[in-house]
Image (cartoon, rainbow, N blue to C red; front, side, top):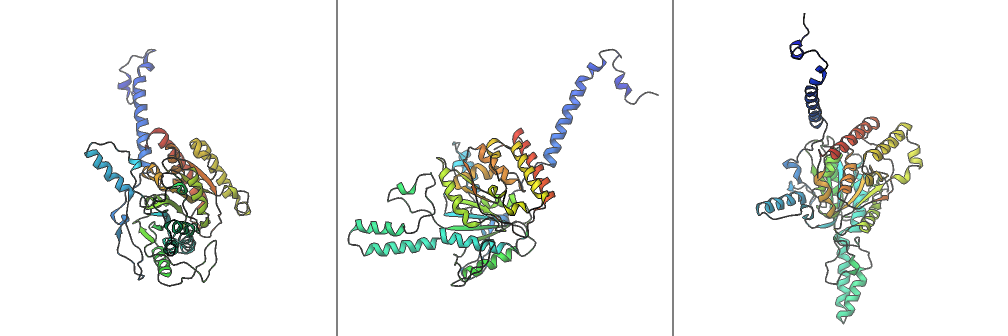
Length: 439
């Protein structure tokens, strides 16, 4: 009985050249196998972020009467850039998309990704609004300007009145030392616009199944309706009779229809930021929010001629501290293993960042078009992709030591998520290294 498939082999005489005649067929099958493996890899493992749904491009907030508003369209600088691109294409005009971002409407945008965070979100928001309203609030700026105007009207000469106004304005240092183009505001002319102020918080509800949405709404009401709100306790502060009154509409809630992951929620929020600076922070409040001043100052110091810069909050200085030493040996082993993989698998500048995973990073507005539109990772590894994209675009990055403490209720599964992060890092490096991902 003959061997199955022998009719194919019998086409060739059994001589010394038989093996060489099969080489073309072997190469064809090898090429087919490689193409099949690549297709399976792209289909099964390469992340492909879904597009935002219509309801996810709207927000709700709390008005001055304490009522939740009807959903309103979110401003989106990314969509504005796409519209400009389509128009330029129709008119056959050249356009540099990454320089077409809309100007900021306020100074600071805080993006908070939240998935089932009803127990931890209030404390984080409390510390955030106290800092933001005190440092960047428009009401504080208005009081300063009102005092300056009052003093100026009582002065006899225009020259002396200008000096008094300047003196009053300098009683409270401005939060921003440079303008968007990187120039120092102190050297700007007297006719230049005043430093930008104001803030917003974008809470991205990432498909929560608990009362995260209601928690945000209740928090907003307690800081809008009372004339003198109480200050609630947070990870870094204690309850006090003295709090801040926030402007209606300053906290915007965006609800995703289904869970996308921390990276997807952050990216979605950053596409709709209106601030000159955009920072994202974890909902647990583990990072000391008042250290935002450090991030802003450090970012302004390294901004390039286009105003681009990234300030990365870092916990690297805490590696030898009691908080880290007391953690389980398994967790510390996985932490060091991940850092080792980062050094091996990321570009040189990204590999020098000692802490890529701290959920406290600040971006200047001109930086956003170089990073946000090119994001693919929705999971825990998204921070690394952001830093890699910044390196590819030549954006200056600085690492800043910030306060941090362990907060009960973390959703990180040490073993499962560590393996997922290592796998995600490998996929990230392969995709950007082989051209599957492109800017």
